[in-house]
Length: 460
Image 1 (cartoon, helix red, strand yellow):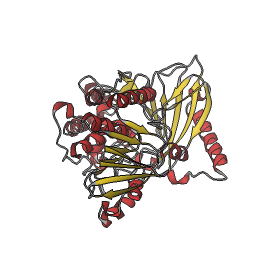
Image 2 (image 1 turned 45 degrees about the vertical axis):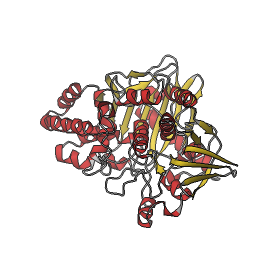
Image 3 (image 1 turned 45 degrees about the horizontal axis):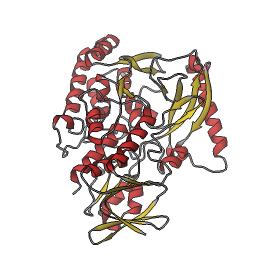
Image 4 (image 1 turned 120 degrees about the vertical axis):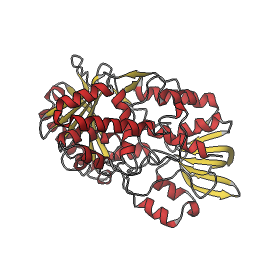
């Protein structure tokens, strides 16, 4: 059986569904193919004992009125309601080697003042650095589309690297750690992520940090409603195994034998999976070799628990780092943590540690290894955060293998956005065949939206 569409999107994550809505709103008859049984398989999260656990969305920047977030939500027809996180300390950063605790505040002036109070000898450098970050974010066409910025020729992951800029401005290892610990949010260490890329992802948080009412569940529902209203056809349990060509049309072949023909095919999948699906001539051989050599971001080992009703943490996120050189956290040297607290009661807690994705494979010893690693983390949390450990009931755990089961690839954000490596481009050598997703331009929730907008600009 072969079905014909103007546009077919492979993958029903944020990038895929955003691309589908953009195509449909341009009047194209559009279909989405998803290998799993639900759209947004990672974003939707899960519930246990009356608490909802986020697995794909925790918080974001640029969701203020007039910002990029509300602009794209309106463009896509998404009914989402952002809310501001506490301005005084939405992030708490704990530098375990020295014992310093620093709470990130919203507002550039407030942040500058607090950093200068903590590191008075670096006051002038702090001013210069924050001005530099603001200028870098302001130049990003991707974050300023609502103001008419659509110069997509800007390459946001060009040198210098974040670490290079930090080293040029500051002497204090503590200060450099505080300003780079948000590398957890994009999965690439400071020595590899470009300064401009890091600014686009994190600088908005210096201004304001936001949640979305209902979190991942609301995002899932909003996309579902918008897709229905736009007339997009969704085919679940439809795993693509090949993309071929017949004349100017792309033919997507599913594992069950179904076929979909289209003029525009947008693959919202991991780039290495895309190489397996696409015709051999999709890229030059040298470019394909370089893509295959790109590294994955670390994966996530997560513990999930619920606090007793008498306990509530006002801080939304805690970063607990075991080395002042944040680059070493990505090398697996000692456990560092990102801890997220829900804003609802009972309060859900997610305790996340970076781990090598390829070290977690399902096999005979998988459950034993998972239980042992979870026990290590529980003991660590008891020592570091007794106020959490004494009031939490642990409910579940996940590994990079869990994420692969839900998403079909990796165990983290996808491929690293390494400033020194080959850039992944959304345009291929085959007219009408495009690639999108977190590995292409920028990771994270906003990164997925941005990448799809860039692809939409070039689709005929």
